[in-house]
Image (cartoon, rainbow over all chains, first blue to last red; front, side):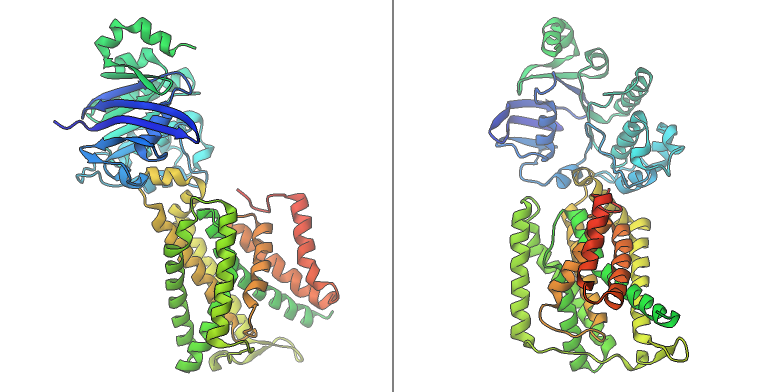
Length: 236
Length: 287
């Protein structure tokens, strides 16, 4: 079976600085994959290269067998990818309701399992804030809105970048619970984070980046077998 | 100044301000949504006025001429965006300035070639050619009131479009975070084409409706461009609401200045801009 996402030999530069040194990984449909690493190791750059937000100088990205290289970002997303960016990507001049309305569409195969009402059921706090502007929400609510907005595009793959960064422990738990629920519903997820304790239970596959190179790639059993090595890659 | 004259000047100021808003709205939208500083925006106003003259002459109907001009302006805007402006999105402001200044020269040369350099005029359409008696001695032309009302209707339409429709949501989202719009699987370039085309059409429409009350002369675009930049800067770059308030301010201040202090009137709007920028360096309604 074709993997859902295949990344091969990704080389990305910012100006002259070489950030990604041939990143490889694959993600099977239905899998939850973690992408871990310390700050500045290339996690976000990897995501941006996959989404076409930065142009890699080498390597290729395939989604469901389709070569994404050369496609603009919006066409890549239309293949069935949704993105919850670091910093949440709120629109300061759109209400909560408008954030959701703007994003809502059918998935690639016409699936509509995520719709407006289901998002509000999943995140009841958003329902109380429909007329507030995106930037008037608390950090946790913004994160919920960013996830709800992504889900409304009915994607096959949900990419989350630092979804719980800067949030209070209780809110973090709430967000992780929702992500676990999304994963259980069968949607593939790619989760960038530093929290190995949560990710080892949540994800099936784990990839660790150090200085733009993959230093670990394996399932949860492999991760637990090598937990000491992996933790040294993640600790500051 | 007696009350009737004050009223006439106030109406003139409002009407001029509303017309400025029509032009400035496109300038500020294109900057706010697309990040493009279009120096050739004034040329679109000129193109509108010349097209209105040309088509009114050949169709014998100002209304028909106005409609044809608006449609052609929209098409022109779309073509310009698709062929020239689209090359600017990933470039710096200097490249934008170079290209759009170049466009001013091209449009001026075309105007000179196609229509010559004489001052032209369009008659006020007969239906709107009367005047309304304000007091026994003072009357106000119906056409000027019509211009003000039409501009208000268009401004209200623009307000509804931006705040109540999906396209408006997209425009606001594009102003706020372009990358995120693309990440929702939305083709932002199509939005850019629509916004640029609409901006050109609004500027040209302002040229069309001012054709019967202004003389159609070479260089009319540059003059209006500078005033519109004053409006956009006072209102806050990219803010439609700001452009509306600032356009009325500039319109009224400029009109009264030329009555009260004719010697220095050309400076007054710039003084206004300087004072506002001292208090609010980002303009009145900047994001």
